[in-house]
Image (cartoon, rainbow, N blue to C red):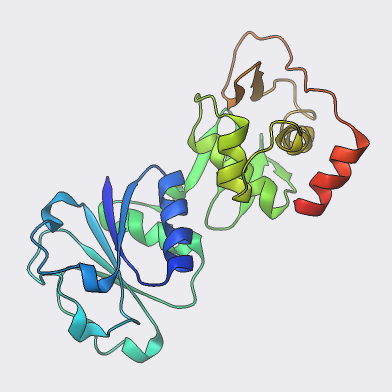
Length: 236
């Protein structure tokens, strides 16, 4: 699915683009002055448009377009929304709410169950921000929740330490540290250690993968140092 995000605020645009990309969508970002007359909108499955910059009158997206539009607006714009298929999400909102609206527009049959990630008894409820395995609630920090959601969305895909550091912490990974390894170890202590089978595996020389392996040797986490633990606690 391909999404066009019309947003002038770089912080908001980066936040939404990153979240949508992690959720498996291709995203293009433009400012409202770059929208022109919209001849290329036919290549997108959904348009997300912030109304707070320029107002509804500046929206040049064709009202009779086939793709749905998700408008982002403050309450003050509730009566001024441009016509056309779609929905309106009022600020402030959480990313979970935003993602649920996106999915419902791209697939009108989307249910609340479809915003729950599931892998071999491991459940992640993106709307309620809850995690459980085999019915046991997992108490995760916000960063652990984000890290686990990234691994589950990319289930079966080996993710490099650099990619994980960029997606979860928005930092450039220093190969001389085991910063990511420390956080993976902490996540494993909650997701894997209390249960008979591991789901998070080390792929030596490459990174980590979350997948259900019927027959596997236990993953051995790399050695950690106290200094790296303290560093990770400060950053995470």
